[in-house]
Image (cartoon, rainbow, N blue to C red):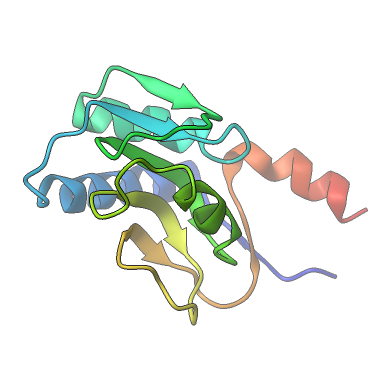
Amino acid sequence: MVEMQEVTWNDIEEIIEKLSERILELNRSFSSITTISRGGLIPSRLIADALNIKKIYVDQNNISSDSLFVDDIFDSGKTFNNIFLHVDDDSKFIFATLYARRGMTYPEQLMYGEKTFDDSYVVFPWDKLEFKNNTQ
């Protein structure tokens, strides 16, 4: 059986608030949010609402450094590394996630709401069915 850390909507709301406050502390404005369709859509919408950002771009090949990149979890670093190749100015790039995998080396561009408890698979409310289908 796969070990899992199940996240509730209440957890998400608390993390969104915490992460949004950290992003606001940057004293920087973002023209948009960019995300990937698998994992990032819902957190992007919640962060956009919290920060009053009106545009969300999905699965872009070119990413503006004035667009906040949002995903649900920084896990292996694979998504970050893939996205980082498409950023126009990596010195201004910010990658925001709800969770960051405990024990990983984090890039300086990473902002996260919480660290995971351990190496368990994090199951978000929006991917319960995916998790169930993959563990049967």
